Length: 228
Image 1 (cartoon, rainbow, N blue to C red):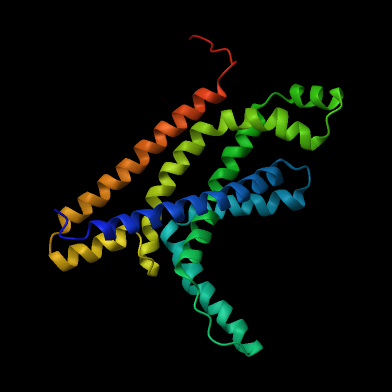
Image 2: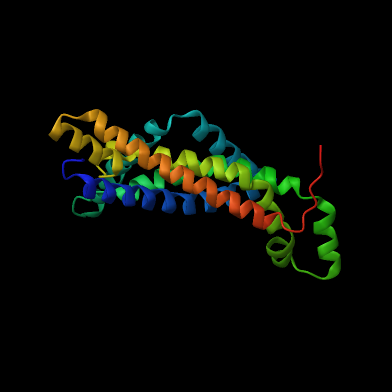
């Protein structure tokens, strides 16, 4: 049915998931750091975090990808010339993961910041008065509630991130879209292979939604639901 390109598409699909998962890990770290910086009382931390979220969300993802990959490679090699290094070729996987993680870190900054503000401050104060240190308050009291509040937006960003991984094909990474394009060019049946890629993306997002729905039910155990 896929003229022998099914295995190639599956390999590309696994690479797509790998890029998305690694990018999510980086985005969560940057998002948490950005959220804490924006919530800080120190303007020295607030300003860089605000500039980060404002600029990244204003620039198209593709432009950021090309700037990081080509501009970053030029910068690294210019520094290498002054140090006498050989030419350094940046791995497309690393560039793609870092770029997508950097982009979505800006979105998750606002998600986690809003989730943190949604937790009543009285609970943090009560936990501190009970004798917990700040790390225990974050991991035992604030963190679980933050996750419950942030989960819908995290789910949405994850779904968008999976689809955004398709831009890594422009920097030479053989992801699912790149392999679908190669198969379409070789067989002259673009509709077949791009439709197959679309169905794979649909499968990824559907399974992700089911997983997030299960996690939402787990995090809502013991939480009273108010009927409207």
